[in-house]
Length: 343
Ligand code: DP6
Image (cartoon, rainbow, N blue to C red; front, side):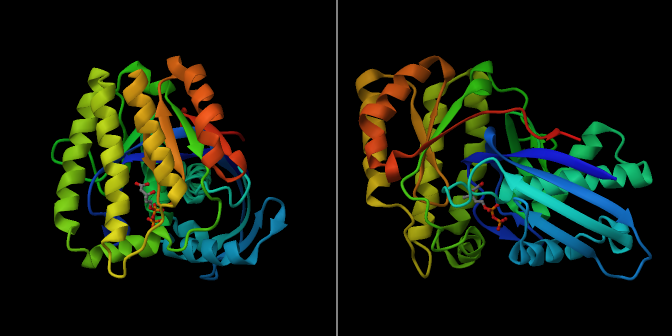
């Protein structure tokens, strides 16, 4: 049997930064599910005699990839308790991304969620479990999280929340849940990604999370994130763009402040990242248009804005912003519908 899933990347508004135990977050986070940046993964399964080992062949963009193969083998080994059938399976996995490698877009969220969904499809077919769609997505979210924390938010449409928060019913550290109450305006939001640099990050997210264990601001940061989750949810319910933007920008700059105050300290923002932030804020002050930014664990600036001002923002990008991007590169993305099964 084989199954193909297409799963998107996501961009956090309130950031997950710091974890404990088996991939459990130290605070709640919320993200937009994107649509244009996605991974498409086919998982082919054949039963074999149980021999305690996982037999895997992994292809990335049509080519056998030993590096990725090792990472996936390790991941599959770790999730055998969730999928006992893995040790009596031969798996051939083929994965590709809609965006070229090293464009400055992280692929772990889309790749790990697409793989997790494929494995859940196999379980469903083999064992007849996960017939209920909510149960299916919940397990896919748990497995995605074990691959890469932020991946657990990618399976849901529009917006997803991950991490236990007293103010959010049904929230959990183990899986994400969809946030269904946001005003319609957020369901067609744009994310134009201004690529300041497509170089690989000098410090990985995994290493960054680790440094939170000794960051002197850690405890207050986790409180702030939990409060910001509630505040941004309220703002999104009310269609309050100004509060939404205030929190998104505070979160982005806090994330980078945490990197700068880690020990050892590091800086991922570049001069052009700061230039773009300044230009975006100036444009907003001058025009009163609701254009905001967020930033991932890298130098690139994500421009967030509602669909109705798309053409104005495109003019801004062309006339003022793209000159601060690497080769004038901007990747256009927008909020999307979550993961979809292709086969
Ligand atoms: C800055 O999910 O990539 O994008 O769990 O170690 O795989 P691992 O980390 P990862 O961290 C993402 C950090 C972030 C913020 C976010 O997406 O919430």
